[in-house]
View (cartoon, rainbow, N blue to C red):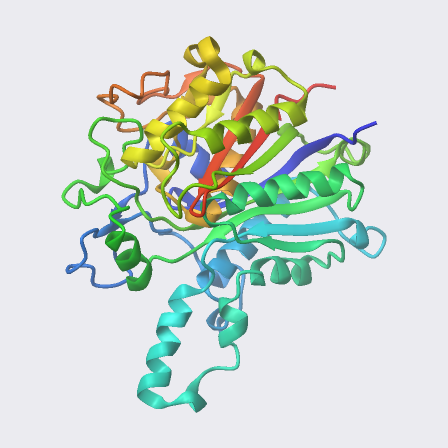
Length: 413
């Protein structure tokens, strides 16, 4: 019999606020976290706006010296994991540590540190490079540090699949529990690359919004006026747990994960195929793994990047999978408020999907005033909706044509 997997803890560090309650409250009120870039002088860049984490206080989690040796993407993940652990009420000790895994996702790692120490090497020479340089930049450091912090000795992995990394991490963690490799998994995603190289690189691809005069409405998925995504940062960590293990300790359960799919477009390094074939195949795989029909799905937390191509192709893919039922689905893009957190996005959006299942409230798609003609589904525009959805998908699609979808349902015995 297939082992059942539930979400029992959530920790969020996002541009909407540090802490799950703060983030969720802003999200369902439709309040975004996008503004002018403050991390560096962006006046010469085509895109000068981002969704930065504004209220993070490292001293709450780290001594000053320790924080100095950790890139922000690692700090955010550790903080989110701590928040998730506190939320879950779990105790990790010698009796269970080998049954606890950590599987995280990250797209780009410590790019700001690479920028910093490239300049150090050029200006001051290689002997001035800190011995912490490599541990600060490699993408698996969040999972390593979380494991060391909590004392977990089970599977320890990192997915580096671009913007699908967080979703792939959640899906792989789910499977590790289903297969019996562990009973508990800390999972999700983290990213922090609001720096000149990343903003410059994405700008060169013409992927970012240039609505610099109106940051608050710049992320507008599915809208006629969308012109690119908003680079963002943060971390979302979920605690997944085998159902009986969770029930035996009286855990709070947010939602049950029931399916996972992954696929490749095999098409282009950055653009999805016009017919959304890869995304459609991935959603079908996830539904098949969950053992449910398309017409049983109530809600989709869309990838919804606010780029002209993604939103159109994702809509096409949804229509391919769900046929007439596509028009009965509630769909929203929470990136309209958080911006696009790249490798962290799937973890944060999986958390949002679990919270949607738990609260019965569907977050809105902010800034959707004029849907484009090819985006004609119900994207829950502007205002959150009380709907009590029972089954939901969380979609993520990344550069390189990599796709990930997780299926959740409202928990019942």
